[in-house]
Image (tube, rainbow, N blue to C red):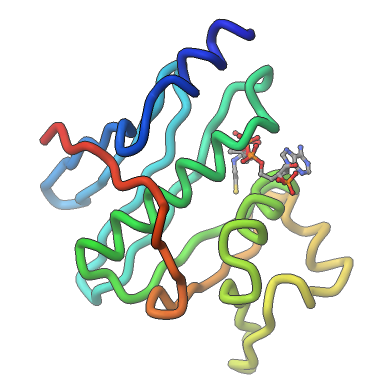
Length: 155
Ligand SMILES: CC(C)(COP(=O)(O)OP(=O)(O)OC[C@H]1O[C@@H](n2cnc3c(N)ncnc32)[C@H](O)[C@@H]1OP(=O)(O)O)[C@@H](O)C(=O)NCCC(=O)NCCS
């Protein structure tokens, strides 16, 4: 595990690889060694949908997920995206999104009222561990991405 972690940490600033796939459902996939990855999907309305982040079990808790989500966000913003949307489907994912976006991440209820993630009721937070998850929205103009690694593009 230590060797794999070292290999990831040795990937320096802007060493995260982004593969851009065009087509009907365009996708940008960001990756680090050892299968650590996150993707985002640019939408026609100028928003992006963040895909599920993945870090293998034994490498979790070392900041890799945060690094990838920050990089995807900085990249999407650089590409002109104004809004980021996603669905949180695990308590680890909830921590990751809260840590990355703080109260800029908001959840809208059916009446249109928006609530910062940190103020979600316990039962809503618990629903992160279901398939449908918690849908959130982030206004990217309110996110300071200075210092977040921009990925290297591979096409
Ligand atoms: C979610 C995931 C990508 C996070 O990756 P990671 O590399 O462990 O994330 P980080 O190390 O950057 O941790 C981010 C924060 O989440 C916390 N965290 C990590 N795993 C956690 C867990 N199982 N439960 C609660 N919090 C957790 C970390 O402590 C950290 O907060 P801190 O810096 O305040 O301590 C990873 O757990 C994963 O791949 N899980 C399985 C797939 C999944 O659930 N994807 C997200 C769906 S929304």
